[in-house]
Amino acid sequence: MVLDRKRDSVDPVISLIAKKFIRINPDLLTWLALIFAVLAGAFFYASSPETELIQYYLFFAALFVFLNGLFDAIDGKVAKLTKKTSLRGDFLDHALDRYADVFMVGGLALSVWCRPSIGLLAIIGMLLTSYMGTQSQAIGHRRDYSGLLGRADRLVLLMIFPIIQHISLRFPLSLPWETTILEWVLIYFAVVGNITALQRFYSTLKWFKKQ
Image (tube, rainbow, N blue to C red; front, side, top):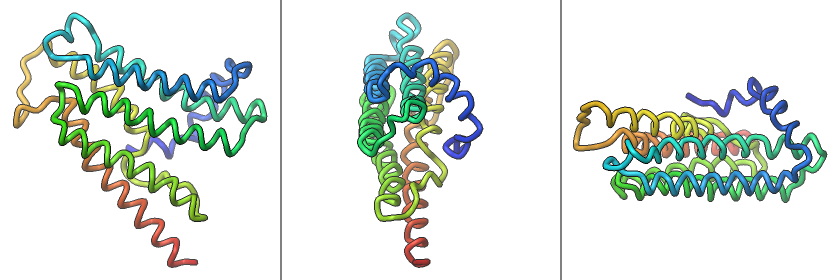
């Protein structure tokens, strides 16, 4: 599942939505995306198996993850439509994306759904994946979206599996080693995220050899 490669296919939909926001400064949309990420992380952190069936915090978290992804997608499109694209805006977007990722995954990593050690490895894999992608561009190559697990993939998983975790609480479910569904999501981030970072690292090294 590499949704970052499907950008062109969803571009018409993103453009249509972005046209509704052309009167708003794209930088403001970038900051709004960060706020939604903070809220998602807060709901992940506050949720627990004991109260989830009453409070529905995982549903709220999934909603705010969706809003983060949506506003992160349209801020750049609004900038293009209004001819406000700039290196500053691109830098702001990517910097706040990293903070957003840490807030969302960090909130889940520190919650009762996950062991902190697994959450730490998930955050490392996530950050290294993004770093390798942008560092490739920084040294003169293209921005690298290759690999098994991109940001779009992570967001989709963080939208779907919190809802599945909520539903699973209504039915008896026993996973190996007393893990939770959300913990397995972070295990996936940890393993596949680090593999993706290594894929991008190797891809850039191959580019150097061709120079």
